[in-house]
Image (cartoon, rainbow, N blue to C red; front, top):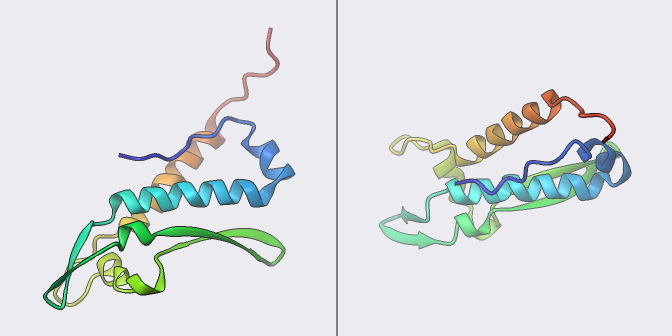
Length: 120
């Protein structure tokens, strides 16, 4: 189901050397996960709407001197927020939250990995 890339322990070295690139890669992975979890067709005001899942993307910006990946859908597909958070008549589907939680779980696994040390 997921195409999240599980990084090797060299992630920390890469993060120190090229933080924008690593944050961008992680953002792209989380966005791809969210897109794969999002519904493909949504009935909006009685009309089917398509393309919302495909519009999910990641953008890297600098905040307080650090790169940050922002993951969202494009403006044309604003209604995806109603799918994510729900409405008074439609339960929330939380595809963005699940993608972020998936990354958080993978990140914990990465941090908990033991460094195998130098090779033989």
